[in-house]
Length: 147
Image (cartoon, rainbow, N blue to C red; front, side, top):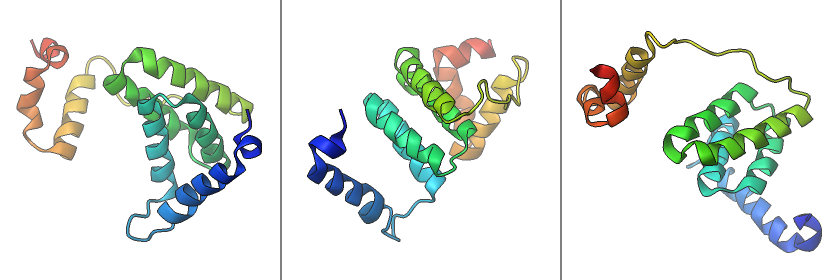
């Protein structure tokens, strides 16, 4: 159903809020890439499949890198689980192929199973501080890798 036809006033208010009021506020303005990725991640977290597809269309039209979008969706598995993320990965693939993007995307792999834990921990320590070195021992998944 096309909300522009059934609910034009709602769509006008929504788009004004999202694309003018929020993104136009210099105090809280994000660059386009960050803004789109934050909105897409929020849609995944909220289970908003239809809105995710709409925003992804706009993001790709505005030149957002498909690799960044895929990474955003991939990262959701750690926070939301495979069941929720898989639906969004399928939606992502559908939208990307409709935009003429060839899948799979080129590999972005920078680790393998022999160094993934160490490199991941180094990134976590860089972003979140030295406390991460000990906190990984409290998680069952990470701790099993250490043993």
